[in-house]
Image (cartoon, rainbow over all chains, first blue to last red; front, side, top):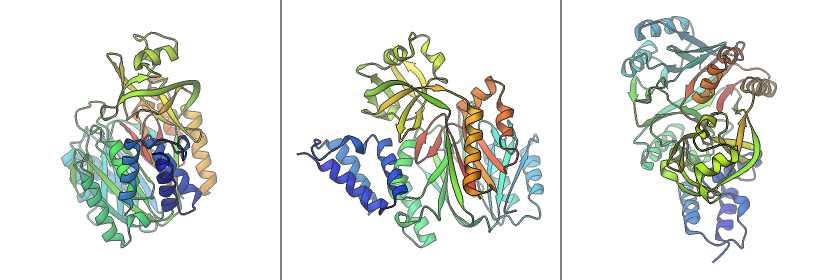
Length: 63
Length: 368
């Protein structure tokens, strides 16, 4: 499978930043500090389970 | 005046706290933040400070040197008092057992109950968090990640020090002292606020990608597919034996939007390198070279002044490695003087917090 990481990153940024560019930058910074660089992932990127786990946790913490 | 600062270099905790209390007499103190040398026994100083301001909320931490307007100090207590105009509301939480995520969640539930809104919905333009963390816990990255996942509010702060003894660092709240803990103060300021993150390094254009790491131990096993110490020494053009002499002047940085998030090497262990903060596999780091701490800090303060119009209070979390470099170069008093006309307190920290955990940086919270 591929592309799930990109989809989850986009979903996190949309949900949390709510079109606020400053928040968008902060959330991208938080992701990079976790070792997930949003610029590295496309809809063709392989679904790495370690990265997916980190993103799932971020989404769960938001709820 | 809505924010006041004070300091004392008296010999005993009783004398110093008394002197600080006198400097805040006639001020309508609602919140006190203090930073104290480990010359003062942690259990004593926290209780004395709370007793000196029984109607206020009081929090702080131990240090490796203190900063107050115009001065860099050692063996002192520095304090900042806020009235109700400067800080409209505040809730202080103690997070114990730092590696237990549930401790953070419990603290955030308490914040939600107090402020009557979900922390995930709190407006980062109305709230700001100050965090002080046990500087020997090694838990800062995990804690900051968990907090960052729970809220959009900016959390800024530092890791407590212990005057370079590396034995025990303490955080203070409610008249008590804590280890393996963090104090998080969620503030609703009554004035505008902003942040400074300043570090003095330039990119040498030499990339070090982390190809193997032991993240929990803050250990990089390989850079660019080579033993970490070998790759770092090669990038510097020196030997492995000589490399530790370059640690302070040549740390590495994770660049995000042209801004380095500094990771400072601590030691070479075998052929691996240990750092003062976590470095993850896959991270592309750059070799850095130290520049002008005084000049860069001056510029950062001037920019904050221009942005806000004026500064009524500044809290400086200044990395101990910056302080040591300033002392080595005889520039510590020049650094203190940068804050001469700004009501300032700060301390030399074992790590800095701003969005995440970083090294060799000064993070500052600035009030208009």
